[in-house]
Image 1 (cartoon, rainbow over the protein chains, first blue to last red):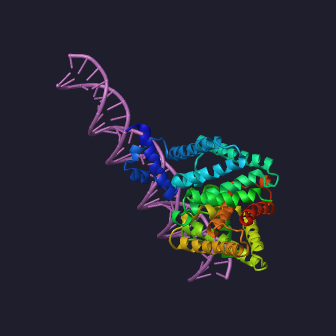
Image 2: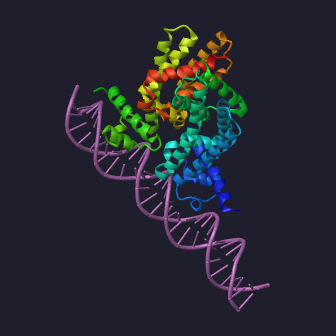
Image 3: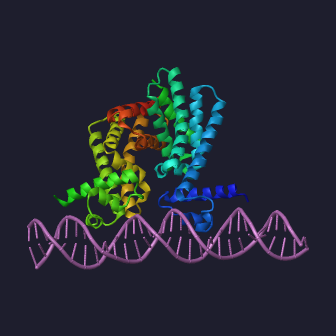
Amino acid sequence: MKKDERLAQILKHAARVFYEKGYDRASIRDIAREAEMSLAGLYYYFRSKEELLYLVQKQVFSDLLESVRGKLQAVDDPVEKLKVFIHNHLSYFIQNLEEMKVLSHEYECLEGEYHEEIAGIRREYYAVAENLVREIRKRHPTCDVRPRMAVLCLFGMMNWLYTWYRPAKDGGPDSVAEQMTALYLRGLLAG
Amino acid sequence: MKKDERLAQILKHAARVFYEKGYDRASIRDIAREAEMSLAGLYYYFRSKEELLYLVQKQVFSDLLESVRGKLQAVDDPVEKLKVFIHNHLSYFIQNLEEMKVLSHEYECLEGEYHEEIAGIRREYYAVAENLVREIRKRHPTCDVRPRMAVLCLFGMMNWLYTWYRPAKDGGPDSVAEQMTALYLRGLLAG
DNA sequence: CCGGGCCGATCGAACGCTCGGTGGGCGATT
DNA sequence: AATCGCCCACCGAGCGTTCGATCGGCCCGG
């Protein structure tokens, strides 16, 4: 097995432990247990616990950003684009719940360059959504919410998901996305 | 100075440190420094770090619940009541940003009875909001979002605030509440 | 086909440090 | 003299990290 694949496995294990215990309470020993490796053996794949968190966050966030950019290219109308954005975010969130909780909840744990790089991706991702809202405002005069507020409300609605989502109660990604899209877009556009 | 008041002061210091560093990264020694007391001296006022977090969360959450119950009594129409609920939540959030971040972000840090008691208050608070949405659905047939989802989206929008709120950019409590209420209620009621 | 040397991957053990928590005592107030 | 509020000195546990050693597979000269 290649080193990259092995690292990917380890990141998956790490994400699960961070998801369950939180970054600070999770010890490298916990992750070693989960990955069925020795403590010291893990350090062959990363330099520090902080780098491990960085690798988890970077991988999932880059993937998410790439995914939505691909899907947005196929659509023209900004309202439809925003629907695609919301659907993509929620699908990805639900299908990668552990990593996405780690991404949403452990934002302040990284420092220095690690933090800066994740913050950069975050800004890019945010900008995609804000630009869509700006486009919509241009074409729909009834849309009067300030873009910054509108986008932050949207992310709040969506990212809070990790605190309450239960598949049995709330249905699959499509169902969740449909309901949230309806609630949010009617609020954004109606007047 | 009375013991209660001194404890309240200490809780305020603790909330600030928890707010800045997060519960796990904050050490009792940090709190001692902030409160200008010795480590051992603090333990005269609480039994453990976990109890300290519990006291912070319980105090702020009870206060919030009591506050909204008081204000809701003065209103009859459920839509107006929900507006009051949102305004109260956001005002309180912004005026007690440190404690409210600790309440929102450090939910999983308590265990056993401590956790159960905070979870109990949370359920009560949640139930207030959900009952309002149910009332609204009864009287407004165009409201088709499932109450659970509607309420969780609302809390997501509001509680995410601690990750982005900047007074200079986003205005005061009234401004934030007005925009969020508009966005959310139009989405909930429109059809 | 064999042998030795090398290297990637892994491990056990330990280090230095910080953590939450405590036992005993000191001075001031009552 | 007793209680209250507080602090110094300390403890055991657990942390992230490192180090030296090991083991299996691969390459290469004979």
